Amino acid sequence: MTTYRPGGNIIPVVFQSNYSRLNDKYTEVKHFIFLETGLNINFIKQSDYRDPLHNARVQGKPNSQHMKAEALDFHPKNYNIHKLFDILKLPENVEKLQFDQLILEYDKKLDEYWIHFSIPDLGKPPRGDVYYLTKGGRATKIQQTIHQDNKLPSSQESTSASNKVKYDSKKPFLQNLAAYDDGKAVENLKETLLAPNLKKRMAKSRLKKLLERAIIYNANHPQVKT
Image (cartoon, rainbow, N blue to C red; front, side):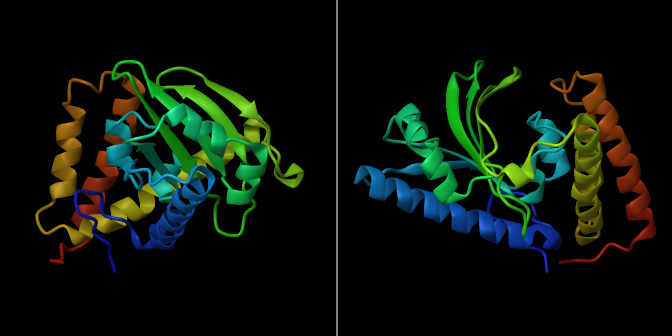
């Protein structure tokens, strides 16, 4: 069964359990903040699951946890985001809430901040990594891995893991193309390749490969109405 969200991407079946765990964690985080501050803070959810096409459009990392429904971005509407991040990034709170990653992100062009947090793969211990990140720049790590048995991988292991994430994230997206009754996904991919903001050669190259796979998949699988 395919899950649809109002105004959001279709969540592949393979990632639906991640999405459920992610929302449970978001509820836990909001309740934790209420207990810490005693304030009813209004939170704005900015982004959670992204399919590979959406992730490319917003210039997300190729191995973004958003593509596995394991990451969520949000910001407080009526509270200082830096104070909020200072609460969440305390080592004891990162340990208590079992974050995989916790990042305070900043977009220079929009002059906007948001908090990104992620959960680990099911059955794996959280890394507990905390960063500051300026969009388009480098991430500054401000807390090392909590679990010593889950140290950061070597560059070779990291590349291998990244390639696996890319494949795992594209596969369910391609499988869900059959859910469209008019080949809409393929058309969206074609339009995205023509978008003026996609000037990076690598980004276009990735999208072209995805488009080729999408066309082949659509040709080999009958379209079914949902």
